[in-house]
Structures are given as structure tokens and as C-alpha cells.
Image 1 (spheres, rainbow, N blue to C red):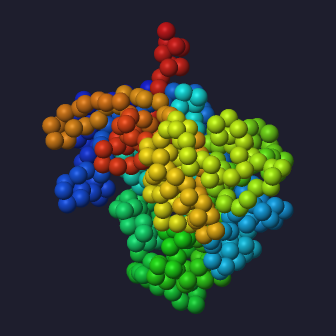
Image 2 (spheres, rainbow, N blue to C red; image 1 turned 180 degrees about the vertical axis):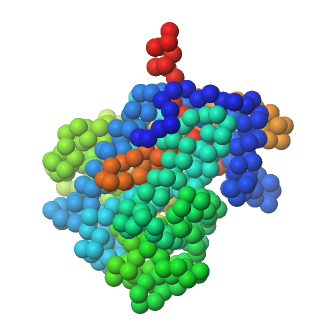
Image 3 (cartoon, rainbow, N blue to C red; image 1 turned 60 degrees about the vertical axis):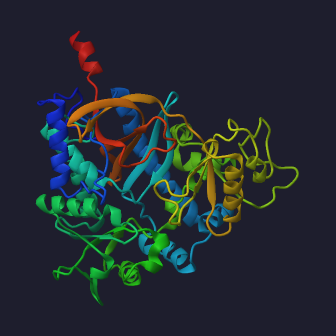
Length: 476
């Protein structure tokens, strides 16, 4: 990790002044989007979310382990030693995408931005998802710059998000001055403002980058071109693979990638964008593979940190077998349908689409068992099982996150209040020179009554700083 400080932040202004300044920075960056009713994008905190030195050290350790995991998952799929695992990852995928994923031109390519979703629990960090096409890059960069101007020093540095993004773009092309097209689809339209902001900041830092719609790409036999006539060296793919048929010129972009006329990151590898990868990590049949390719230390770290996850497979389990690692009412099971019934306490489970679906990102498609009635939960389970052959679902335990007091700006009253929230951390790791570099950490805090933590108008979103516990102990 690169950080501007390993000590406490030293704000130079009052909390109200800080909130106003952060709001103004978001407005000036085009990121403070209000809907027709005037609702803000999210709540503003008067200060960054403070992490302990130990928590920051844990985040530093997770980066290399997650990088190793993506490399190992890439090997698992392409080597083909476990056909049943590949079959899971290929369910519902079109043949042309599967063929593209297997092409040699990007055999070793993995996503160059890695973002886990981490819950803070009484037992420590729990990763519930991994995102390799994450939103929030531009937004966190804008927030980080704003808080730094107010005197705070942040995990990842002042412009760690911008600098890390520039570094991966340069590295993927081996050019010092590449031209980058950040292509944002209609499906990802909500993220266009932050990616437009990011492109402008990259140009300020000396990297020619532009955020465009797919239809704006110009294709010729020698490459892709921007509307201004510049030839594109690298495409940052901010569109989902499940949506390719709806994206103008997506076939031309893919063709240019296959012919090495342009570099595309993240790569066209559907199997690296599935939540069921977490289930494969926990599958005992793959234990020796993961240990061999991760090493014992990384394997144990990931086993302890990545949430237990199971694939909702609707196929029958033989009478002499059981669903590995799962217990229902204290006993092993052979058929997922049995979890459709149970008390509210027994239903402390989460259902979510694995990937390759418009329901698979954000909180879309997520069902929390104890937040539903018995009938609603049963319906969700049966629907998930019915989807197995086209869009598999995964199951995870519901993890209680710690309740923490967080301050936020009441814009209407121009005052600062506080409340109890549950917090999710999203560290952003950039893969630079085969190292996972921590560019920044976005904290999202939702009211404690919320079962799911994600960006929303009444969530507090803020970068993270590191506490001065160690400094105080030395000076004391």
C-alpha cells in the first residue's frame, strides 16, 4: 500500500465547513446528481472513516492474496483439470464468449482493478463479494481529493485512485502515453458521471483518456478511434458481459481485441466475474488445487476471510453423499429444497445471482431469508433452483456487521448529526508490476436497520484514514 500518512488526520476546518467543501467538490466534479425530487446521491461525512493500523495492515495483506486468487482461478478454468468446475462457470454463457475467454492472446490476463466488499463483523473482516468491474473509482478519487484539501490524510494517498488507474492503463499497453477510451454502456449509465470525471482528472495528470458511449467508437481495419480522431490504445471495459448483445459496436470492440488492435481491460473472461468462485474456493474437492496455486498462507487467509458460499445446484445428490460443508438444523442435506422451510432464525441466509445477469450487480436480485416471510423465502429458493441451468444462484450465511456511530451532514438544516450505522469497506487494489497496490478504501455506512449495505441516498460514503493509536502510544 502507498499512503500519505501512517498517523491521524489533522483537519484544518470545522465539521460544517468540511461538509460544505466536500459537497461543493462533488457538485463541481459533476458527481452530486440529484433526481427530480431533489434527493442527494448520498450523505456526506464531516470526516473520513477511521481504520486502526491493524485493519489497514489486514487490507494490505489481502491485496496480494486476492491477486493470487484471480491468477489461480484463471489457471483453474484454462487448464481444465476439473471439468465440473468449468461447467459451473460456463452455465448460461454464449458459445462465442466462451471461445473468446479461451483465446491465447489474453491467456494470462486478469482484471487489473480488484475490489472486494468487506463487512466489519465481531469476528473481523468478511468478504461477501469480489468485483472486477467496480464502480466508485472516480467517486472515491473526488472524495479523497476533497478531504485531503480539508487537512485529512488518507489510506492510499491523496490521489491513489487516479494514479493507480493511470498506472494500469500504461502497463497494459507498455506505452508511456497511451490513449484510453473508458467505454460506459447504457446498463452502466449511473456511473457515467464519475467515469467522465475520472477521464478529465487523468488528462490533467497527463494521460489522454476519454469516457465515451460504445456507439461513439469508430472502427477501421487498423484499430479503434475516438470521435476526435485519436487512435485508441486501450479500452477500459465499463460494461457487463451479459449485456453484450445490447451494446452498440460490441462485436467490433471484441474483434479489435482478438486481433490485438487494442488492449481491453478487464478481459473478456466471464469466469472471473462469478460469485460462485467463492464457493469453489471453499469446495473441499479443490483444496489441493488451491493450496498448490495459492500457497498455504494465502489459502488459509482467504478461507478465513471469504464468506462460506454454496452453489444452488438443482441436480440430485447421490444417497451416499451430501452437500459439502452446509448444515441445516444441525444436519447435512442432499437437496437444497429443504431450506425453503424453517424458522426466521434458521433463515439467516442470503441468496444472490452468481453473475452474468442484470440482477447480479448492486443489490439487485439479493434475497435475505430472515427479512422475508416464509412464503416469500420459499418462492425465492425455488426460483433460484429453477434458474440453475441458465443463471445459477449462490447461498451465503447472513453476516451481522458491527454497529458504529457515524456523523453525517444534514444539508437541509446545514448541521451535523450522528446515528448508528453498519459499515462496508471497499478497498481498491490496482495490479501494477504484478503487485496489488492499495489505491484507496471507500466506506459505505447504512442505517443499522438496513439488511444490505450499498450506496443509496441515505447512506454515508467516505474515504478511509488510519488512526494515530501507535503514534499516541509512542508519544505517551
